[in-house]
Length: 355
Image 1 (cartoon, rainbow, N blue to C red):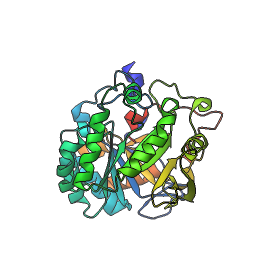
Image 2 (image 1 turned 45 degrees about the horizontal axis):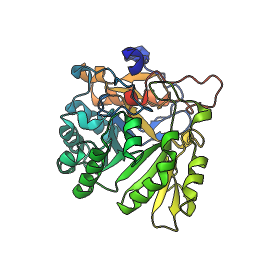
Image 3 (image 1 turned 120 degrees about the horizontal axis):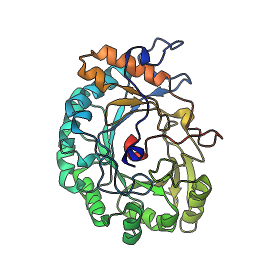
């Protein structure tokens, strides 16, 4: 059961196993066959988490990755430097699991900031314990945070996350505000049981200076309960929000941004919706991902991974690592293919990939 929950996809180890770059233009960036260029790096640093959200984790949690199989703070810093200086990455986000479960998170941020001065460093977190570490993370170089919060109803929160920790999440958000880690974004996954909590969450977000974004649930849950016909989509959410607020569409602030934005009651506040399933934005995707074990994952839904950790530990130079990274991204698929008749769910769940 544990092996199924974590999921171990096919990992390319280097040498002849690395994807061919036939036809690739001679450019330094992370270009793929469809003309997209990756500028946004997501680094998962753990599969451990303090919550058990039903759309992400199994009730028992994911298997613990042995510490020596995780990228170290120094290795993460080095890869961030390669990504920024050799491959054109412009922004880095640390994800999990829950990044705050890493005792060396401050060191990870500090090493990354030193390797790529001036590059925005962000964190996606559930917020539990953030109030105690926000200032140290800011001083280490963290720019801002995204906090996952699906509902303000404590009972609904406990049922969805399998933990009664809503007060701790709210304390974490307050701590991030005090530390100046902004603009602070709140991410809420659209679930049937919390749909009608959405207007109250939006009202709260506006009152507390948070930018709220709702996200359509994707087939990345460990329990494999997701069904397209049962999911809450963007149109249903807009109907629920529209009963309380006047929403004016304003589109995307950046073509590669995943969220479509709406002005709330004429603005200036906005609400975003990331409709990954019903309004896919794969054609403008600019992300590259590293798993906690140090493999490049070119697509959230693509199970092929290319190992960089092995290269790091074998003494490979920056140029060699960058070239293998380019090859991995050149092989990126066109889109997630959720609507295809032959769609196959990824082996890894969201908690094992990183948000």
